[in-house]
Image 1 (cartoon, rainbow, N blue to C red):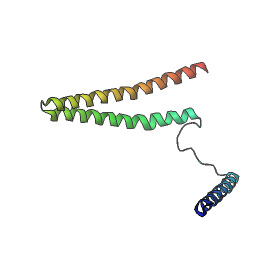
Image 2: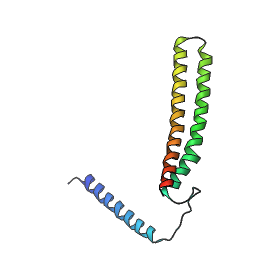
Image 3: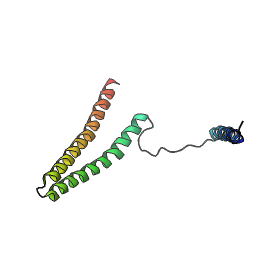
Length: 119
């Protein structure tokens, strides 16, 4: 057997052995980490917090900036057909992206309300 391969196997085995020992010792420690997201501790609360507090505000800002950029493209086109086509395509994609963003939020709210009614 090649010495390089043997040394790689031995180092890998040693590394995984050490990681196993460390993970066993880490489980013995009683450390409690606070939840960085406000709200409950269920998966649903985590997803709601991520969507409502992170994705929607960032998506909203990006949508506004995209609409402004599309308007800028229209203004700078100055009647050039190729530039107008690019500006129109940018506006169309911005509108579709905004509709998808808001539509996904509406669908998630409908699913949430349906689950709450079934409880």
